[in-house]
Length: 103
Length: 103
Length: 103
Length: 103
Image (cartoon, rainbow over all chains, first blue to last red):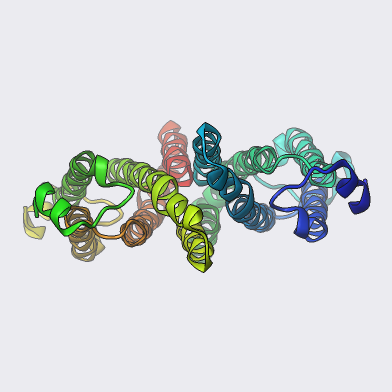
C-alpha cells in the first residue's frame, strides 16, 4: 500500500508522518532477525548470537518508544482535547502498552 | 550449512542439541518482524503495533535466556572444569552478555 | 508535612489523591531495602539476596507505573487541554521518564 | 554480625570478599528509598519522583549484577568443579535468578 493509498483510506495515526522511516527501521530489524537465524544455522558462537539478539531488542525498543511518543502526542492528545470517556480509555490503553513495554 | 556439516566441522556449542528448535523459533520471530512492518504499511493502530513488538521482544528474550542457559551449562562449565584463565574469561564474557540482556 | 499542609500549599499532583497509599508502598520498599542490607550483613545466600532485590525492583516498577499513569491522566491531560507549547513539553518530559523506566 | 563472626560461622559466599562494599551500596539505596518517600510526602513533582525511582532501580540492578557475577565465579564454579547433580542445580538456580532479573 502506498502512502497515497493510505491518505485516501484515511487511516491517520500518530506515526503516519514518519511512516516511511518506521518501515525502513522495521525492515532492518526483520533483516537482523533473519541474520540471527543464519548465525544459529552456521553454528556461530553463543555469545555472538546473544549480542545480535540484544541489538535487535534495542532496535525494537527504540521503535516502540518512537511509536508511543507519536501516539501520546497525537491520538491520546486528540482524545484528551475532545474529552469524554474516550479520553480516559485512551490513557488506560496507553498505560497498558507502557506496562507491556516495561515488563 | 546442514546439521551434518556442522557436526563434521565440529563447531559444537551449548545450543547445538537444540539447534533445530532454536531455528524454528528464530524463523517465527523473523516472520513476526515482517508482520509488524506490514502492519505499519497498512496503517494499523499504534497500540496494536506496540502489542506485536512486545510479543517479538518477549520471544527474543526467551530465546536469549535459552541460549544463555545452554551456554552456562556447557561452554562455561567446560571452561570452569578445564580451569586456568580461560575459565574466568568465559564468566566475564557471560556476565557482559547478561548485562546487555538486563539493560 | 501533613496532607492538610499539602492542600494549603496547593502542590496538587496527579498522585495527590493516592498520596497516602503511595507513602505506604514506599515505606514498605524502604523496609525491604533495609532487609536486603541485613541479609548481606548476616551472610545470606547470594540467590536469596537476588530474589529480594528482584522483589524490591518489581515493587518500585509498580509504583513508577502508578505515578506515571496518574501523571498522564492529570498533569499531562490538563496541559493538553490548556494547549500551547507547555502541552508538548509535558509529553516530551513524560516520554523521557518512560525511556528511563524502560531502560 | 561482624566480618570476624562471619568467618567463624563460615558462611562464605561469592560476595563475601566485597561484603563491606555491598553493604555501603545497599545502605545508600535504603537512604534513596527513604528520600523518595519524603519527596512524595512533600508533594514533589511526579516526574522528579519517577527520576529518583529510576536511579534506585539502576543502583539495585548494578548490585544484582555484581552479586550474580560473584555467584557465578564462586558458588557456581565451585559446584561445577565438584561435579555431580549439584552442579546442574546451581546453574538452574542461577538461570532462574537471571530470569527474574531480566523480567
